Length: 109
Image 1 (cartoon, one colour):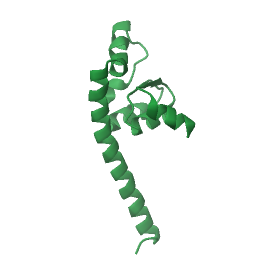
Image 2 (tube, rainbow, N blue to C red):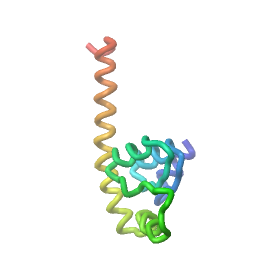
Image 3 (spheres, rainbow, N blue to C red):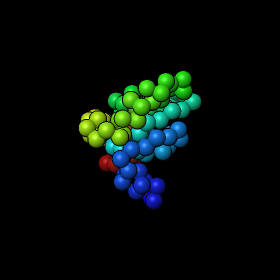
């Protein structure tokens, strides 16, 4: 819980660990990340924030532009609003999925 609290209180996150990036985005925290698998691409796409994904052969100017999603307050707020909308949708889909699972296995009348 400590780590999640730190993520919630931070202005942004830069990382390469899938679960830390997912936790940040799910908490509506701007996350800039890179990863070796297609799942990173799907994660950022799921939050409508593909521009937060860093390619490894990035030029300095491109890196500064991406870091500005965190550092620049106006840009950060714009990204947070965008991520928040997707977070709500993700939570709704998750609740629907668990409802369907419970119905399927007979836990809901």
